[in-house]
Structure formats: structure tokens, C-alpha cells
Image (cartoon, rainbow, N blue to C red; front, side, top):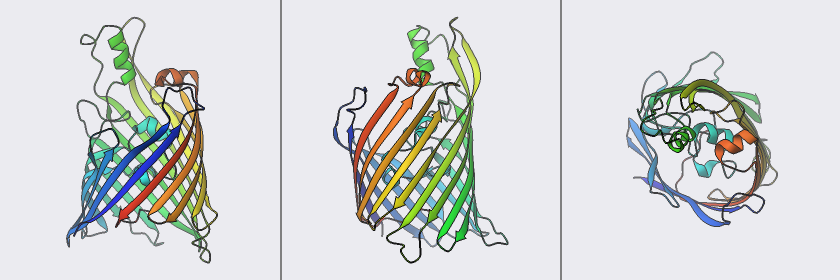
Length: 354
């Protein structure tokens, strides 16, 4: 039988500290329904349907995964969140903070880097008995700022991660990731061509090379004697984007350039009581379309979990942009927001990966 699980997110955004023309108020950010079941002794199925507040429902993830391949191999096919770093593969309700780190939005879009294709993982045998996993993926990435275009080219991703026990109370996971593919013209370029009256006569390239590399580290401490009352989490990711871009010159011609940009975040969380956690996240991101545009940010969150089926979050975060980033994004230089988020879960819900 299928075991459904539903999670709904309520989000209050206050922009009284921002010059953005956005309304305050409550909104149902997203509702998610999950169906997970064993198909037969050889495969299992996972289906996640999302219902955004003001958009059409869609399949966020839908995969079939093998259960019995030899040599510690596992094959997954369908639509999945790519195994890139740590945060990308999380569903919205599993975030540590209300919103995703700035660098992931800049490089992959408002949604995670998601692909329709195949994913092969391998638990690598080793003399030390460590948890070492390799994940290789190939497919068609869903359209976003970093990958894919009108040509629907293939995207390839690779991740290698290992988990090390540093003490009886602590573990450390270190991973490296890479994704290679194609992207199309940016929205800023298309708008510039349209404003110049050249739409239909000046055609930008649809197959621009794009690559993103990542490094991540996650440290977890949970004492054996007080494991329900105390814990510590520290997670950091660094991303390097190398992207071919085009821009419209004053002579109304297209010029090509290769842009390298760096971004990342670091999140620290302390559980100070059975149901309470507090966290701080620091962000920085060079925009992948510009050599000089940069965003930096900081967020503080307080999480209360009355049970494993419910969580409430209170957060404040501030983003600062230099002149180039503000102009490119069409946003103010400073943006401060206050969030309230309420996440109830009903039904069976599978455990999240480490």
C-alpha cells in the first residue's frame, strides 16, 4: 500500500525594513503530497507532488529505484533533485532556514537543480569500512539560470562523498560535486535585445557551456547521554561557476565572454533544549552573469518542534547587493525581511538522508 505524507508551509513575510514593493501578509507557500512504496522485491517508487500557492500543481520528484543490483550499485530513474552538495537535494520543508542560500538561487534558480534522467550510485568498498558513495547522473535538467536551454541538451553530474566518525558523539561528511551542461541566453540579454528593437533579427546562441563545481562539509555532534536535548550542526558549501555568456554591446552586436564566479554559505545550528534550535547562516554569491556583481547576506532562525510532525520557525535575514548586482537583478541594494513559517506533517514520512 502507498503511504501518503502531506506537508504544508505557511509563510509570513514582513518587508517593512525593505524598499521593495512587496505586500506583507500570510500566504500558503506550498503543500506537498508524497507517495512512497515498494513496487516489488526489486524496486521502490517515490512520488512527490507539490501544490504552490498561485501556480499549477507539478511533479517535484518522481522516481523508481532498484533494490537488488549487485556490487553495491543502485539505479534511479525519473525526475529527481540532483546529488549536488547538501542543500540542493532537500525539499522545502526540510530546509534549516525558511529560504535557500543565496548562492543556490543565483546558480540554480528558485527551485533546486532538478533533472529528468538516470542516477547511478555506488557504495565504494574500502579497507577502512568508511561510508564512501559515488553518484553519477545524466539527463535533461529543468530550465534554470545555470543549465538547459531551448535545445534541451543533456546535463551530467557527479558527486563523491565520505562520512567519517570523528568521535563516539560526532561525524564529519565531506563531499565534492560537479555538474556540466548547456544554458541559453539570460533574461537580461533577451530584455536588452527586445528594448533595442532587435527581437527576431539578432539571435543569441542557445547552447552556451556552463559548469558548476562544489565542495561541502557537514559536522554533526550529538552526545550519547543527552542526545534528545543537545546537538550541534555546522554545514558549509562553496560553489564555483564557470559560464559562457553573451551581452549586447553599444554597437548593437553580441559579444561573448566566460564568467567565473564564486559563492557559498555557512550554517551553524545549536540545539539548546529538547524542542528548540537556533541557527545562523552567512551567505555570499558572485552572480554567474557578471564578474563584478555580488550579494552577501546573513540570516538568524529560531526553530521550535513540538513533535516530529510539526515545526514553527521565526527568522530574520538581510541581503546586501553592490551596485552591479542591484542593477542586474532590478532590486534594491539592501533587503531585510522577517519570516514566520509553520510546517505540519501528516501521515507516514520517510527519514531524510544524513
